[in-house]
Structures are given as C-alpha cells and as structure tokens.
Image (cartoon, rainbow, N blue to C red):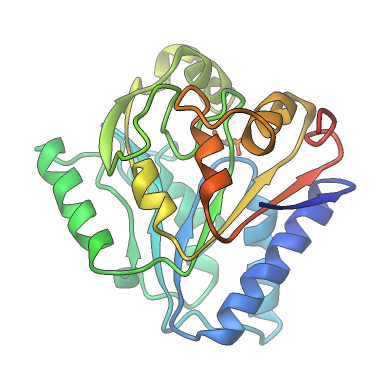
Length: 240
Ligand code: PGA
C-alpha cells in the first residue's frame, strides 16, 4: 500500500483529486466507485471546480456507490442518493442513468442485493474511492464481515450509529440497517484510494496499514490489494 501523509483535509482532497484526474484523463469512460460521508466532500468539491473551469467531462463516466441506508431514498436528505446528487452529481455532467446506488426503499432487499451484484459483476471499477470508519469499516462492512462478502444488508455497529448520528437530528433517527457493497466487490476494483482525516481515525488507519489482516478490522484486507493508496492527514497518521 502506498501511504501519502499530508498536512490537512484540504491537502488530502487535492491529492485525491490528482489521482482522480489521472484516471479520468487516461480513460474518458472510466467507472468510478464513490463513497459518501464527510471525508470525500472535499474531493467532490475539487471535481466540481475542475468541471466548472472547463476541465474533465463526466459524459461517458459511470459510477457505483458503496452503500445506502435501508428505508431511505432520494426523498430523504439523509439518504446517500440525495448526498451524491447534492454534493456531486447535480454539479457535473454525469448522466443520471449512469449513476448507480442501491435502492434503499427496495421492497425485496435480497433481490436488490442480487441486482447490484449482477451489475458489479458485469463491470470493472477503475478507481474506487473509500473513507474508513473509526472502527475500521469500509463502506458499511462492519468488523466481522467476511472478506469474501458481496453486496448485502448489514445491521450497523453501535459505534457507526453513534458516529453517524452527528448528521441526524437525534440518534433515534439513524437507520439501523444498510445496503453495502461487500469486501470482495471492493477488492475487485483496479485501483483503490482510501482517504482518512482526523485523530479519531488514527487507530483505524494504523490497523489498515500496519495491523494484522483480520476480519475484525475490515479495511486491513486492503493490504492485499495490488494497487491501493492511502491519503491521510497528519492527525490520522499519528500512530503510524
Ligand atoms: P466519514 O465516514 O467520512 O463521515 O468519516 C467514513 C466511513 O464511515 O466510512
């Protein structure tokens, strides 16, 4: 794993954008794996600024998002589909029909997982962007998730519900279940860029790059990925 330590959040976002831009320059019709959460917002801002300045076009790009809360769809501003439109898709020229995310309101969750896995198995993600949870999760693959998992419905760890409650009016409003791509789906990406900032990620970042490869720290599987880059700020790197 390549490790790039930078000063702060803005520098992390700029470095991530540099790798994103390299992928898009090389391949106009790249397939991007995208993440939600606070971490990638700066990267998305860089992408929007570059697009507005006449840079990259996303006309031929396809996207796959990692995860979505069960029970939420775009009518909720807490859903990840809403987040992606608000923070990226509505501000670039990606075609809505080329953006993919699990349907949080699917009537049959198992069928929805099968639909998403079928889509993923027909394509190869050129660049997968990831954040990391304070407990070492990637996407919503919580500690204990099998390394060979594909898209599934997960019961969120109590620590994740607590971490994410900052974005809801109260902790009771945080959905307890989510759809998530599995670890095998993520490992199938050609290139992975994982971002981390802030001292509350330092332990997870240590486990990601230096810890034992264990299902108890799902991100540790990335030590086996042939092309993975960690970009983190000094606070998140403080235990390395
Ligand atoms: P965050 O979430 O970017 O909001 O910190 C990261 C994650 O849980 O994967």
